[in-house]
Structures are given as structure tokens and as C-alpha cells.
Length: 328
Image 1: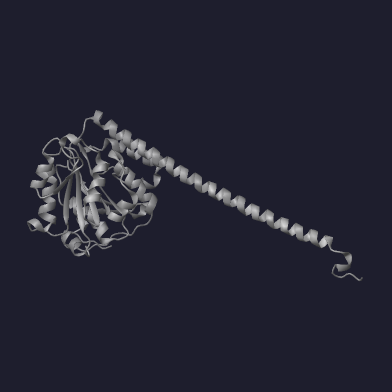
Image 2: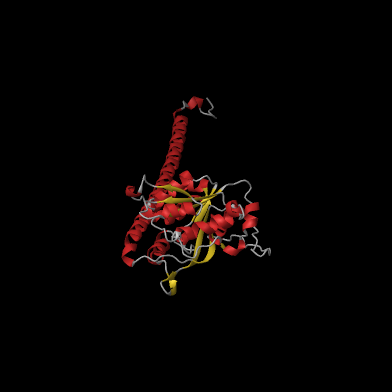
């Protein structure tokens, strides 16, 4: 893969060596180059949103203006889809005003919400794209480079199965410190249960992209656990080396109070433990299969020895006159 810097300088990306080594800065991926390399594939950018009326336009506007033909931008993105997940504010109206297609997870504001994973599943069902990018609706410093960065490895390298964004995450007035659930829950789980993924910088990042075929093959889990579950499932099915990461710079969003993070942490922990148990069960079945195979091989060896014994017995029971070499 030879992506191009946005100032048109050529560069060569280091090959994958082992594990997760596909890391790129977002500036590697020029939108014009990506558009010319689409080769007929349709691209959808999907934005799950719940009560994000204050920020959803700041996310939709740069995509529509810079990456679609509707406002004279580069026609890289074919569809911008916002999934309104039970908002009680004007999220849906403001998304439409910015040019996004909007679908809802319920029949009205009183229908409630289904959770982030459910919203992403609806997006996958409704979207028309062959390549699907997901971005969060609460980012206050969003730029079109979020989308081009996520799409770059997919468009230019057909062996890429999943792209995860990573970034610096300020916390309040500090330049770092965001991503508390990531650091205190997700990464320790990866260290202990899924060490092949220890190179993933932001395992819970809402900014990700994948081919439709990969998302449909792996499925999307419920609720807050969807991001980590997808990461684990893609690595399990296709290998961790097929996952790419893109540095998107700095990501600023609304930091939730600590008390609101517990349900998210609980969902992630429950999912990870379930995936680990499934993995151990699969390993156990494989070990059992090997044991059964070993017993079957032993049985065949025993049968062979029994057949040999019968042959020897048959020779012993021959009439002496019929034995080879008899002088009778």
C-alpha cells in the first residue's frame, strides 16, 4: 500500500511484521487519492447519536461539505447516515438540516433507546455502503480527516478487515487523562484475556471502519460493549494482523461524570468474560477432539495388533501336513 500525503508527497508504508503493526497518521490519506481508488465501491459514514443536538451538526457538516458532491466536495462518501437512538432533543432535526439521512431506533421520542450496539446494527442494515465507517456524534473538534483516516487503509489495502482510530484524549482542562474506562477496564481485560490485541491504542474508540462483509460476518454486540466485542471477534476470525490503526490527532468530547461510567464498564466486563469463556470452550472442544482422535488412533493400533494375533493363531492351527516346508 502506498498512500499519499495530503501535500502530494509520495511515501511508503512499512509492511506488517507481526501482530498489529498497521499504524498510520491520518495525513497519509489524501481524499482525492481515495476517491480515485474507490473502484466502484460505495462508502457510508454512520453516526449513532442520542441527545447530541449541540454537536451533531459539527460532525455531519464537514463530511457533507468536504467529502460529498452535494456542496462541491470530493465525492468520496456516498451516504451520511445518522441513527437517532431515542433522543429526547432535536438531534434528528439538526442532522437532517446538515444533510444527513436520519433513521430512528424507535417509532418516536417516547420509544426509548436501544443502546449503541443496536444503533450500529440498524445503521448496518439501512446503509447502502460496501465500506462502512462509524464516528461518534459528540466530538466537538471533528474534522473530515477523521473519515479519510479511517477509510484510507480499507480503500487502499483489501487485506484490511478493521480500522480503529486512536488519538489524544483530554480530560477537562488537562491535555490527557480521558478514556478512563479504556485504561481501567478495557486494557487490563486485553492484557489478561486477549493479549494478541495489546497493540490497540484505543480499543473502545467509536471511530472505526470495516467492509460490510466483515461486519456482517462478525455481527455487532449490544450496548457499550460493541466496540471491544467487534475488535475481539475480528481478530479471532481474521487475525489481529489484519487490523489497522490511524492516528486522528486529538479528540475532544463531553466527558461523563465518573458515576455514569459504571454501566459502561459493567457491560464491557460481562462481554469480555463471555468471549473468554467461549474461547476456552472452543479450546476445550479442540483438546477433546484431539484426545478422541488419539483414542481412535490407539483403537486402530489395537485392532491391527488383534488382526495380527488372529493371523498368527491361524498359522498355528494349520494341520502340520499343510504347513509350509512340511516333509509329509
